[in-house]
Every structure is written in structure tokens, then in C-alpha cells.
Image (cartoon, rainbow, N blue to C red):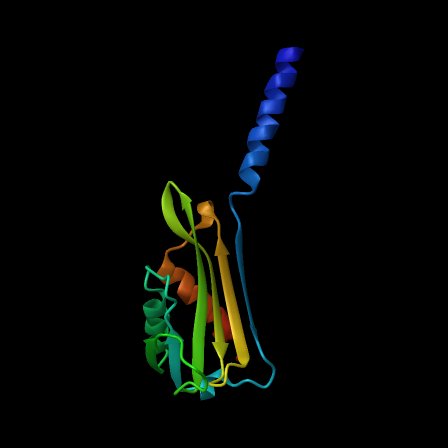
Length: 145
């Protein structure tokens, strides 16, 4: 009887430990009245601590969509573009380093937020940085329809 209780307890503990490992969450929102498609030039702010070139991945995604994009350090508003893009990337270690969460914010040249998107993938559902950038940007642009 004790052996059965111990086996059941260990099995339940193992199953409980696995439930938090496979999380995938994505979201996006756009400020009402915003026409992202009318914004033709973007400035992507390179985060000083970014060693994974997320700014370049965002730039590449926007260029594929037909926009003119420059990247560089944070500037004093107004920015010399139709929109400025900032991002926050969170990395996690689980046997290898992977991008856990990416948040992208699109603002007008004066810094007013017009759109935001987020992607969160834990270890078992992890995506590469290019895929997560694509996911976030696709979700933001879906909001414009």
C-alpha cells in the first residue's frame, strides 16, 4: 500500500512539473484610429544591451513588408521617420539560451504609442528570434485590417 502511494505521488509530482513548461502566448493591439499602413518610414531603436541583433531582425521584417527602415540609438523626439520602433527581449537559459519573450512597441515620431505586440514561448514551445519577430509583427499588422 505504501509503495502504491509513493508511486502515485511521484507520478503526480512529475506531471505537475511538466505543466508549466509548455506555454505559448501572443498578443497585439493597436490604438484606435491608427493607420499603420500609412506609415512608410520607420526608425528602430537599437537597445544598448542587445547582443542578438533583434533590431536588425525587426528592420528586415519591415523591409520585407515594403517599408524604409533605419536603425540606431535612441534619439530625442521627434524622430526623423513616420514611426519609431522599440523592443524588449527577454532571454532564458534551458540547456541552451533562447528568446523567452519579445515585446515590440510602435510609436509616432513624438513617442505616442500606436501599436504593441508580444510573443512568449517557454522552453518546449521555443521559437528562434527571426520567427518570434515575425510572429509579433504579423500580429501587429493583423490588427490593421
